[in-house]
Length: 244
Image (cartoon, rainbow, N blue to C red; front, side):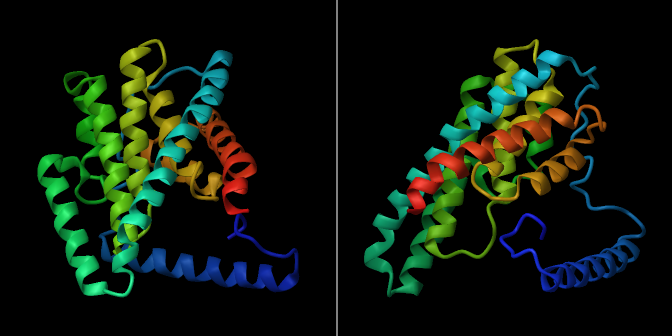
């Protein structure tokens, strides 16, 4: 809520208070119904613990920059799908049926494109060495294709978890090439930078990724930095020009 567009007024903070109360009540209900267990996505990954060094901050900036072309690829995919679907704009049944068929074909060809990706992220992370650099890039790209297609064909849902999956594939791929970069650093920075380059809530995304990976407070600093770098570049330079 604090990262959304709002005017600095008492009314907004009243709305924020209502949102906080509803969030606490919702959490309490689900926490009890889940036998006092947190969401399964928290602590989903457990990369080796590493000691933060100064050069890691420089790496996090570079990884934040690296997420920018990924965001541009997603923007281009959206433009392609919009042009492709334009003739079907007034035919929702045909449009959604065709979309489901095409996304289903993609899921058969590349099963990692199916679903949110939260079930697949741990498997890909554990088997990244066997999967290899090229296939990790293929997984990331096809996930972006599936996400863009689903959103443009009219399916209901958000992009965040799918973008987290794409970021995790890229983070694992980077660690495969540059083994001196700790896996927790590569994963955390890319998982947050990819969605932060497209969704304007970088701090919230950073907190989510930190909880998903289970990073310490000290190792969380590069994640926040990568999120802010990716967000600042795309929102301040690239997407501003696109919106205008």
